Image 1 (cartoon, helix red, strand yellow):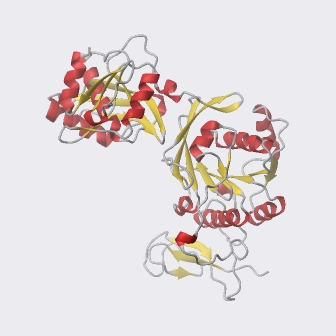
Image 2 (image 1 turned 120 degrees about the vertical axis):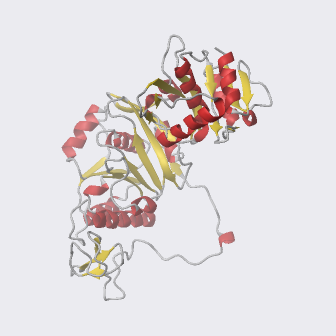
Image 3 (image 1 turned 45 degrees about the vertical axis):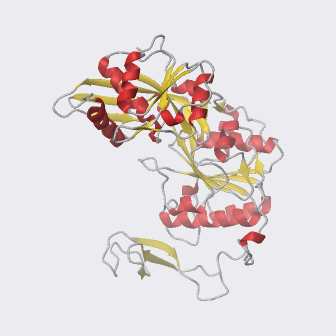
Length: 455
């Protein structure tokens, strides 16, 4: 079969060229030509033929909706992020920093699925079969029956999927796979996009669940074209410091479950193990309360978790610094302005450092009240009382807005032994929670005044 001719398309103007050029001959834009396959002159020829069948047009109301069948991976934390388990015909993309544990977690999951009766396949493009076997022995999986293939050519991988017909296959990683139909190197935008498209169509046509491992860039986002995240059903990100034993897996996209769900893992000598009580790793163990510390309850998907917010306020120079780790720095600057305007607490000549303990990243505004209480506590040098927790969004007008699912947050705090809380008025429970005293506030100055009285 003759090899299809490649063309180069400009991402700026859409113009094409028969060869790669540094500058587009149509719009004069630099470095915008991307390699792709030219459409075949023969109308019956289609490189996607046989991968996906044409479906009939039906009325939406006539389609019978049924729950998708899930295959649990044997790891509760991973199943939580996936929405209950691996879905037949689903495509999962998982990314993270090198050495953070992607291959380890997936090898453990494949072994558990294989022991549960599922046919599995591990395609490695970065390691040899011997290296995978060495890792399996370190993880205590020396007797694992997972099938392994060391291959990076797309056409051979698709042939193996067709012959082996596994229930779950892992491609580690998509950046190492290449197609002979393209002349560019593995990992290029054209190769990643083309290979991911073929694998996705193969998954939908055959029903095999495919997990793609993706590299990340320096800023932590998945390398390759952004369209890669739109092709797949689920996108997972590994988070956490490689120097720490704890790892977080966050669902950024999930067509079969909740987004922003997280799984918490601990790296051990036998691989990654799920953490049943993740709140414990996000709370520092202080013998006595210390200034600048405030515990909040955040929601990660469907799970309420307690996280300690630490603040350090110190005298600064003419240009005071505002630095936050795990929280939005721009929002910190806004909250300090609200603190000055509506509560009369000025930090204009102070350096302010804020940190979310444990390496967790908090994106929801419900952390606002805890941040302000921690900053004020550090500035005054007075600790908040033991067993204290707070949450709530703070607006520019100084009002304290409610946080979603406030009842669940308070119940989680009470379950872990917290006895005192400051929450938005709209989140005050109608029925008292046993063992917990709850103060409802409407304004930020009211919350700070209450906190002073609780010292």
